[in-house]
Length: 378
Image (cartoon, rainbow, N blue to C red; front, side):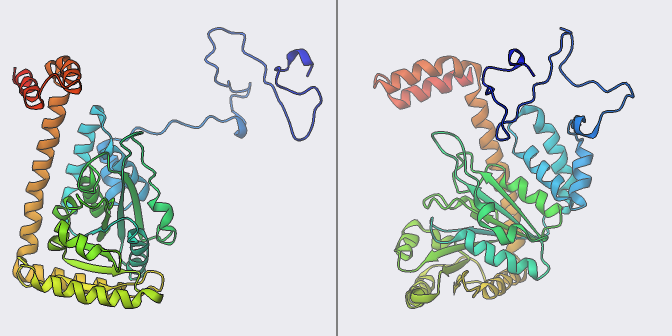
């Protein structure tokens, strides 16, 4: 190719480290730029154009999920998580189509402060469960940045062994700014996973500390991970999270930390005995685990089994799930009202000026709220 037909950024001398091939342009102004088949009417394999992804109907999603198709399950969750109005109706059709196959799993919420080893524990625990012929779905929630609006979603890469297991499904999701340590669509995602045949659902919360309570209203058993010698015992009591815990698990009980872990177990056991436990037939248990040495996971699962049996025996497990359905409805109502308020034309019109006045200290917040509510009510 002559120099005159080469771009300016191509070096004068050809070299194996810098190979350039320039395609001739298209002179037809109406040409769409896509390659045309040769005279024989068939593209060469290298020139084939990838077909566009098929647009799926609700029936396609439902059939794929009920058949246990992981790819279809992942696409359905993406559909559920979408904030697009055009996806909302389709997502609800999919949920309605699989509801009859949901609700047959053991739902475990797993929380704890950052650094307690939630992902490590889940990988060890989940891998053992999968080896025991269970199907485990992990819904790992990562915090959404209040600055960039993004999430790292790195939990799947940290659960390397579990993510490769054929009986597992790991779905990292952004919290989207939702309080309570869970994603906005965690409940819907959980139902889809149950319909796909996953009999154990593990929800890992973001672990931010003060608002780690919403997940309690979504699961059967609430597991709180504690770290011995880090002040977690007192902090847990102060936050009241121990009162919500159905199972307390002290992690990293290995090596030089065994003594501290055993002391922490004794202290927490004393605390649990002093608490008023409203759950009939059950008092929270305190266990030790070591994910590095794979110790204690069988005890955790056995204790979860005892908890579930107690709930079925005394009848509060089914009552708990029914109340959770009502809580879910209330959460949806609150979210719908919030969206309705924020996107109301009258509110959008006056909000910038009211915000400016509040920022400048010219308008009290309560008066600003009254003006916004008056505009919303018309």
